[in-house]
Length: 164
Image (cartoon, rainbow, N blue to C red; front, side, top):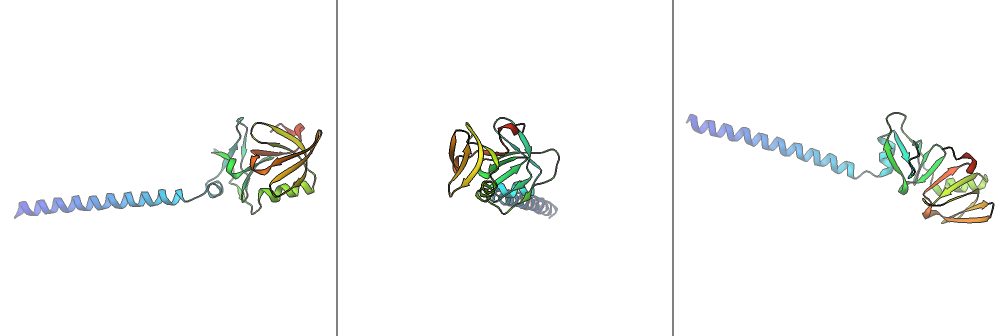
């Protein structure tokens, strides 16, 4: 009978270990699943600090995350174009309920100087009007209309403020 007890005891231990492994895997899968359901805005707000990085390797600490944009220093970047790397130090970003269009309309009302890029070209001027799907700039060569969906980034200040 001792042999049977040993076999049953060994099977019980193996069974308990298998259940514990399954529970650990299930917990890990749940944690991964919950992280996968989070969007970029949520990650930028909860897991900071982050640095916003542009294609030319310029970067600045993410300060604000709006409904559809990221703000870092003088830069505004549509959320769908924002690339962020974890910052070694700094404070996390603050949330804003504002949209990029709302900010652009405020800049236009104040006639603020901006530089706008589609990722390849840049336009400088004073924000004049933000329509439903475009930003109008008053530039030296005349009015420039920039579709909102092509904006890769916008820098507050004119071309002379390009030190960022």
